[in-house]
Amino acid sequence: MHFTSEQRLDDGVLEREFTLGEIPGILWTPGSASAPAPLILLGHPGGLHKMYSRLAARARQSAAEGFAAATIELPGSGDRPRSAAAEQARADLHRALEAGEPVDDEIVDRLVLPLVEKAVPEWQTTLDSLLSLPEIGGPVGYSGGVISIGTRLAVVEPRISAAVLFAGSFVPRTMFEEARQVTIPLHVLLQWDDRGNDRQAALDLFDAFGSKEKTLHANMGGHTGVPQFAGDAAAQFFTRHLS
Image 1: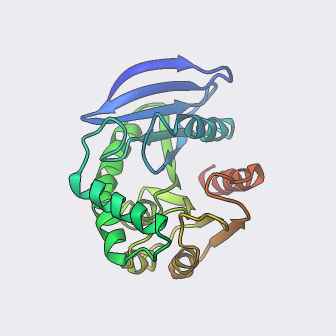
Image 2 (image 1 turned 90 degrees about the vertical axis):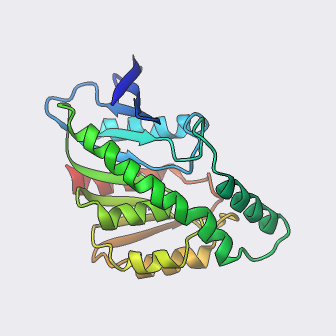
């Protein structure tokens, strides 16, 4: 892990950009931590610079609770090399949505499954490096989307103790079987009027999760309309499980 820049934000949070091989990312750490901080991995749908303001706000809220937070750019997003297959699948998805047609499972599989296969090992490699830093301890949480990435990580990564999952992306049918293997505490956020999301599939996925402790927090509004109190509830969830 190579840190390429750092700045101290106005609330004392230290923000550092880094690269890990070809993977760019950002790490935020609390300004006044007296011990190694628990860590929250911030998932997002791609485009690190485009998503920066929202990611930074989430990270600063986490830092206020005493947590470090980190994010990385997804494969094929931002300045990373594009995948022709993924671009074609994305174009097919947009074409179906614009035409008001059902989104075929085959399109979802082509778009999401290769992303999960590439992104999850990258998250694990990043976690290896982050946990080697003296200012980062444990436990570890995952927060955000793409929900299929969060689901896979919850199954295969034992260092993740709890997850807040954003139900805002299409889910391949094969992920439902993986969801049954998830056992960590979950807090799932669902925007009821998210036109780019299959609401019923999101509800079915929540039902499939095998966790004994799982909460579904559904709110009216579109994809980017998550109310502040919903974010506060997610922060309280991490305080219970990571503090």
